[in-house]
Length: 105
Image 1: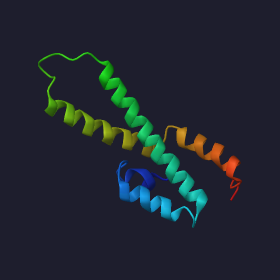
Image 2: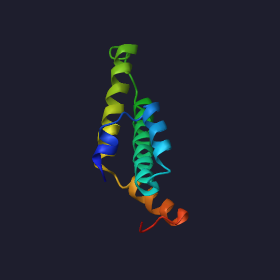
Image 3: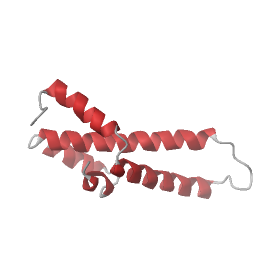
């Protein structure tokens, strides 16, 4: 997995997603991998958000400032974990490559 595709860009960067969309016509296989890595990062971020919401909170550490910094940390951590790769992106690339006929290219 190419760490530069995920770790160098913010997951929710609209310009980055637009650039990825525009470059898809040039090299579909490379951009398929980049899109799969972005999906993996977003999936991890949602997973972490759900885990945070499932934990009980006490009155001492439950305020909007704490929640804001937790969400920033979760975004950064999910981006880092996706950059290292958990295997979801590879499975997506394999599955979508076989459907689009770009396997082996």
